[in-house]
Length: 336
Image: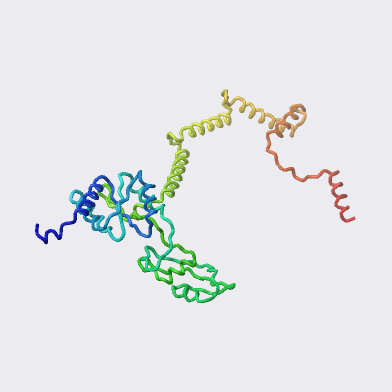
């Protein structure tokens, strides 16, 4: 073997690592790249334990990750789309399960973390208007140097307007890190974030993977409720609404039978009660024209029936002559 050939051959240790990595990638249907930044080894171990039933996290050097992807791409060209996501501190996330489940699990496990001097901001940082609680002093200069508008009010410094103090991709300055720390603002998230996943021939990036499952569930519940109500109104029988539709039809049939005085074992009592009420009403009407025609006992029964069937209303303040006298004397007594 020539000296130049030997220079380009990986050492045995790297060969073994690469072979192990390739074998591992071949075992899983879904391969993803996740950023490993601002996270402790203890947190990584905890996440590995939490998701061991659904996925595994494999950390490796970027050169080995790229070589492994290039090797797998010989059989599956689509996986080469992941190559551009191997950048900075990253790792493989591997699963044979649902890639959305894994990505959203990791997203929910993120925790707030403070900004550090020299850190590249993964997203813009906004400081909202607030009372800082700081006493007037040199700190005003620090606040204003990062673009905050301030004023002194009630003996403390107040930030009077919201302001973006750092853009995504910018480096966090020492002053900004100090101000954020003093204000108790932790603008970033520490954890694993899936940048992209290759699954079933398709590449899914971060924003496509993160799903608001609670929001979707609420939308589905509302859609089901609306569909159920519509099917009832349109009388379209389904497995879910059949009982309610039959109940509605039965109630409508009973109401129609009573209104038309159609007697059945179920409507007889209501029809007779309705007929009796109508008879009593008619008796009262006749008696109002000629009281001698209707016997007194029938009129009494009609009056009793009317009182039972009429809804109770608040009695109007209609005073009898005796009551009027009492009221007059009562009011008079107020003035002596």
